[in-house]
Amino acid sequence: MNFTKEHAFDLAQRYIGSKEIGGQVDNPTILAMLKLDNEWPQNDEVPWCSAFMNHICWLARLPRSKSLMARSWLGIGKGITLDQAEAGDVIILKRGTGDQPGPEVLNAPGHVGFYAGRTGDLIEILGGNQGDQVKISRYPKSRLLGVRSLE
Image (cartoon, rainbow, N blue to C red; front, side, top):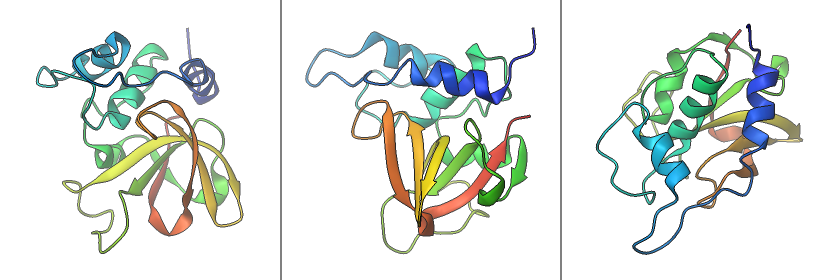
């Protein structure tokens, strides 16, 4: 069966509300996402946006980065412009504010999620580890590193 980015987006929406559990207890779903391709995470209180993306793409049989580094997604799929983005395309951002390297540097902080829409200069992203949970959040366009289509 061939899955599409729309299928991946639909799957991702089903996880909205999944969140980290503080303290000694961890969310087993998030731990499973983290350990899909990596053995080192021992709890859910680590950056897991890329783990969420890899999990969803694994379920949807779409290309994935197999890395916990958000910027690893800059090399997956086909590069497109933000104006071409549709629900289910991958958005890669700089993490936080301040002086961050551009998309040519993969080993740097970042954030990754699915494109969910746009309001002015804000990009709406459906992703994991947004406020320690899966949800749709808005990010300034100025943090954009790249947009990738998985089809």
